[in-house]
Amino acid sequence: MNVLTPSKSNRSSSNKKYLASDHYYSGFDSASDTYNSISVGSNGKLYYILSTESTTTGGHFYVFDPDTDKIEFIAELTEACGEKFLNAIPQGKSHVNFFELEGKLFFATHVGVYERINGIELPVKSPKNLKPYPGGHILSYDISSGKINTLAQAPSGEGILAMTMDHRRGHIYVITWPTGFFIHYNLSTGESVHLGPISGQGEAGTPGDDFRVLPRTMFTDPGSGSVYYSTSDGDIFEYNPMQETLNQLNGVDLRLDYFGQYDPARPGSMAYHWRSIVWYPPEKAAYGVHATSGYLFRFDPKAKSIEVIERITSEPSKKSGMFDLFYYGYLGFDLGPDNETLYYLTGGPAYTEGKRIQKDEEVLIGARGLENLHLVTFHIPTRTYKDHGPILLSDGQIPTYANSIAIDPAGNVYTLAQHMRNGKKITDLVKVSKDSIIL
Image 1 (tube, rainbow, N blue to C red):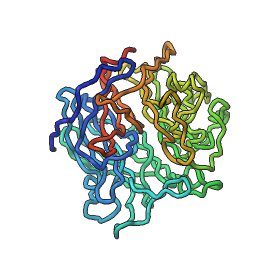
Image 2: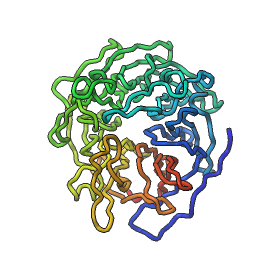
Image 3: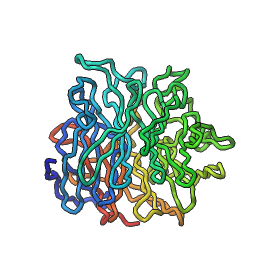
Image 4: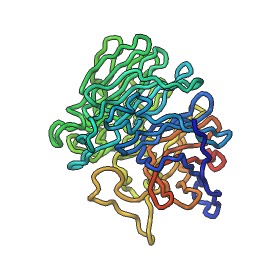
């Protein structure tokens, strides 16, 4: 591993209304929009992957040590998958967080090279005489030895978009992109069960017909072992690993007036999907956030009930009464180290000359304008919401496209966000110190 010294400016305290943060340089100038792919290991170190849209290199895997403030490069994803000399579209992304079991981190890879046609993203035809994308991999990384193994590969050249793990039983579950196959992988046997597509033809479908945006997160009930995911139509499905079946839950759905109204067959939003969701053991229930509206809700899979709690968008967003400009919603949502407090990185309106920046109607995918990045917390037992304010990088920049979060045991908050470096837009590690966050 090559040890890198992070490049960061001195923290500015001139503007007290912002959460000052440090940004780091991992050494990857081709890093682009990155989703999830950041987690804190049991050793207290932060593991993350920077994605890329490059046709010549894959995403880069790193570890950050909060004690030494140093970054180490671990691996390039294409090489880690044993495909360096395949002459194919590389493993440009990881779109999932890391799951740890018995000293190993488990994660998956995704394609980073797309075509954008009529508001949807599709795999490209092989450019520059490259072979087609070979399909995403489920990987393991041994924290002690540094060894990476590929465990399984998605079929039909599909990337891996979402993943969860049943730690008690050693089972991994993924959803592929663009078609949306559901795959159950058993660590003990090495066997896989392939089901799907789970919703229409997924994001490979025809807009207005069988197109359906796919879920980015799902969760496992550790008691029953069942897996749950949402669809853009607002339905909730349960996978029963004993019977190896997918079943729609009756009597409960996400088609709620508070969430808005959508045409699930049209691209441009997550429709009725939850954007991100986490299991909360004390209540044996899950807490999720709806993508566009930003409403926090509680889902009890046993009672088959949804309770809308409150909108956990930023205070400026609440006051404006407008949806945020990133219509897919935000993936930076997780339980903190106290296992009681939800942390959420969300948008907030930005202003120029006293006027709110309006959305760009011509942008069909992603952010439709500049937003501030706010840190919001929600304490579940007391149901206490707090907007800690917008985050400002130490050189005065606003971090953008933040769709990931990790909180270390000390309470420091990390994300992977866009900012400018030497006149070029890149994505890299950002840290908000615990000292600036008052719960």
